[in-house]
Amino acid sequence: MGADRDTPRAGGRNGRSRRVRQRAPERSPRARSERRPVVPRTPLTAWLSRPLADFHLILALCGTLGALGIVMVLSASSVASYSPGSDSSVYALFQKHLMFVAVGAVAFWLGVRIPLSRIRALSSTAMVVCLGLLALVLTPLGTYSNGSQGWFVIGPVSLQPVELAKVALALWGAHILVVKYEVLHQWRHLLVPVVPAALVMFALVMAQPDLGGTITLAVVLLALLWFAGAPKSLFGIILVGAVAGAVALALVAPYRFERVTAFLNPDADPLGGGWQASQALYALADGGLFGKGLGQGQSKWMYLPNVQHDFIFALIGEELGFVGCLVVLGLFGLLGFVGLRIAMRNLDPWIRIVAGTLTTWVVSQAAVNIGYVVGLLPVTGVTLPMISYGGTSLVVTMLLFGLLANCARHEPEAVAALRTQGPGKFGRLMRLPAPEPYRPPARRRGGGRAGSGRTGRPARRADRTGRAVAGERRRAAPEYGRRTTSRSTARRTAVPRRGRR
Image 1 (tube, rainbow, N blue to C red):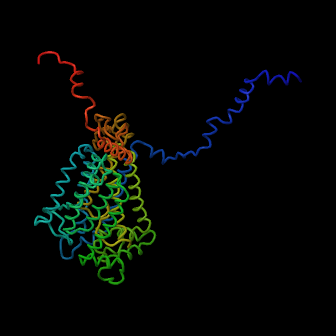
Image 2: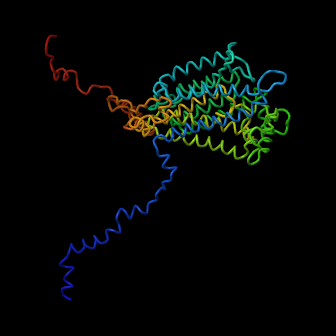
Image 3: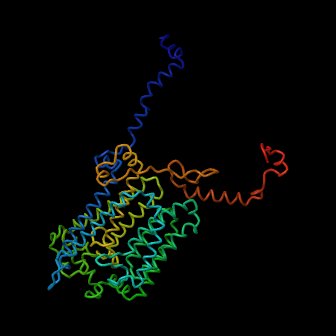
């Protein structure tokens, strides 16, 4: 018994260490990690983690939306193409649409293949050219069609410069905001020169007049400011100004006021201003859950004007039903997810702003078109991207998909994979060069470029403001700009030069 009582004393510190070692497995890191939530790894998440997943998704979305547009234009344009007593074919508009799709495929390839650095360098020139085209289209060189003078028509080819102006504003505005990022906390640097140039575009487009083009340009400007990190108070001011401007424009032009009144009360004039909105709702209601079938829609028999242009979503609801409408909404929702994912995964701030702006542009345009077809918005004449009848809008939209695919190939993981494992099947098929990795701007003297670290991401707004305040305090100090040593002392301590004088 005595030996048993003396054992803990003889062990002393060793006895306590043995007890600690026995309790250690209960507090091991493995036991703590088992309590943490684990994200399940499904086949979908495994596929999305691949380096080129976003690039392949953009290709798939462009191809799916383009194929759906070809089928629906074929169904919608056959009646509009037919003219009794003439030799015109029922496939006349459909053949033109195929031609625009072919031109858009070339634009898509150019958007993927041209290096983004070269596109950024040419953005200023593109902005000046587009401003000149918007001014020239108001002269006798432009053509008046569908209530606005906004086209250049040369033989069978037509060009709508406002569509090109949207691309130029997105690319050039992103370039200017990235160059001036360190001073964007000051309002004059945030607004000038992007906002004045955009306002000039708004004025030229409204002079045509083209309300739909102006709305899309406004979406591009707001997306630029949002992804550049503008304060939220600015968007409140812009919203108030936009509402006031919309009210003024509606009161100035009688046809705009008629559209607003038809939206507020479509049953007041069902055979006049409310005709399109009412017929679009009837077409959607007739489709039911699964639709009447391709080619079986009745709204295209002149019941719904411009069904192949602005109201093709109503024909989708009539022939493909509610399920077809959900597919279209899902495709544009997936486009929004992929585009914003591309913007988040890139390191280059210019690519981040461009990818976010282009994605917001396309998805917002689709939302506006679908909104006035289902009666949630007034009719503004905005086409449904990639699905409505072709033209400059279709070619420019396919160019945007090419630019988004190019941005997806510049993600860090995609760059590493393409430069080490080769271009892949689609890269070899389209002869795409390997993208260059992002290199942050070189450091300047005296601490380097503010906000550019190893990742090249801009500094936070608070850090930039702190640096500016510190600089102003240093310049306001009494000793700022004075010599730390007197001239006599500097002459005495100067090292004499060797050689001839």
